[in-house]
Image (cartoon, rainbow, N blue to C red):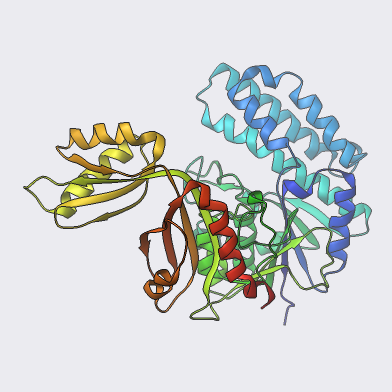
Length: 437
């Protein structure tokens, strides 16, 4: 029986300098089975490419600068076995820049240019791993049959289509696979959203039937509260798949929202680790199947400067139809709604405070009237698992807290803006036991 693979994903945040490549090689050396590496572009590369796409002024000297930058990470790459591939990527980058400057709406050129960062990174890392004695080789995600769910840009990997096209024969030694990209619906190159290399890694794990995925980061795991709040917390030791997916859609910036999905069916664990910590140590955070039915709050996120608006429906038509018409109009005008609820003759919307006047105009346009506007507040979203979320909500003792909505996975409240940090800190203390589980 073939030993199961481990998929290691290294993002740009841990590819900042040549010493990071030594740490990367150390982590691969610690693995006790076959390994696949999925990589993002080197630190800062994608941002430079994005600037060049949007403003030709940034394109000057870009190709030569990126050539020099990548050779600092991998000296003599241009003279080694991948030298021709390295030059070809740079030439295709230069061609994409010329096409984009001639036609700013050339989407194919834009995708080709942005994909260059991952292609260069894969060549650099494969070169470094070979220098360290590993049989590594760079592989394009599209070359192994990775198909995305859209054209040019996509939200996710099409797992069913990718499974039919998957070419396992290419994955010998240590394959270093380009994250973020694949073939689109039309057969041309396509990209996932920013941070999509994590999703590439879990899709590869699903296609291989891997034993685990390791996401190497510059942070230690997933925290109950985003560290930007300055609240001292430890990483959550274990996070169920569904809650990890919800956290990624809120404030857990260490995860792409589509990351978890490919691992659920097979129960493949996802480990979030800091690059400086050895693979032999326990993972700071492991994501896996649901194990606890009533754990209470696991994490919390905060959306600042929102307002609660109440409006009355027209006396004709059903509340559901009028709510749907209103929400469709707001979406068409780019006015986001964080939460909404209805009753017999009215609706309540949680919206950005700076959009209240535009929301009021939209209400007027559909024949509704604003009945009440709250003060600018903070919306705290708790995620976890509750058998009785209403009872838990009733026990909360936050000054000025007001319920928005709740279910067995999520509880949302409004609090005064000045109480936002204290509310998050209180939640972090209550959930602290989960960091030790």
